[in-house]
Image (cartoon, rainbow, N blue to C red; front, side, top):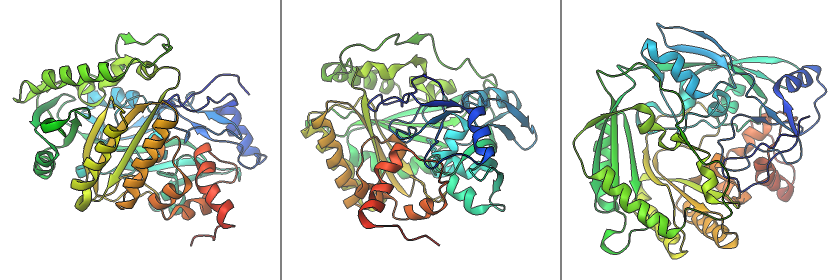
Length: 450
């Protein structure tokens, strides 16, 4: 067992000290001697909260399992170990004209982590979630067996593992279908909007016409400028680069400052500069894929700028028919609390169904906010945001969360017992202990889901 500190990206939860290498965990599972709640896979620590932590047991460092095993240049199916980073998948497939069909906001997630969290991107309206493009995977459970899982073989394990936040076993390797693209470059168009009403008028047409759509909101703007922002649309350029750039940039935050650098004066100035720079030209322009998909990857350890207390991110999804009311209510709550969000992102989810048993994306709109951790005041705000979300029939994202209550989780995922019924007994996370297991303890033994 190692002494390495493995932290979640939000830096607001205690780091894990009980770390076991992947090879040792594999041997333990194959021996059939793993104890209850002993393990949880840890990819590259890009989850914001405690879904990648196991305070009562050990976390398994999966990063050494990082081999790309095979690639079919005709079909775009790539087979790789679960510790392979998305940046490595991009680099391997780019010369052949392929790109992942779904990418989140960072390329530094592992393949296993992308599956376990069923991540989404800027094109959910066209491609659904990451899980929609998973062909198969090998899952090692505490019965000592490696199970081949696909949509037609071990179907229950397949569905439960996608979006199952690491609770069904260790994903050893996986095969995913990539998307053929004319180039890696993106033709990006920026459309300023005056308020949220104008955004909602633009959203559906933007989805119909473009592969990628996302909006940035100036969360601190008030008065007549309230709800203003920029709508970004993108499509792969017909003529552009097929060479993946080196992942990450030359900038890095070398240490954690003793205070939050991203304070309100900074955010006010940043938002004004960002809106001016990105919104001054509305003509389409060809840009590199890293700047379009992964802008923050260019600054290493940027999360340190939030200071020693870290940050909380809140991502919600709400039905389309209430979004015009709920999105302004969420933004207004943050403004009343005096909390500024460095990243405020608004997207529209489509109706493509994930194969996952539990998955965060669902038809409607999703809003992402992040706040420096100021203790009670921030927690009170997040609780209010939870309440607004669930009362509107929405859900809160587990892998962006570090503190949601059991009732909010149950309202967001009413079928959670189906995952509990197939959860490997040797696997547990701090998130699951904080939510699902608390419901069981309160209500008695959960009924087994059919």
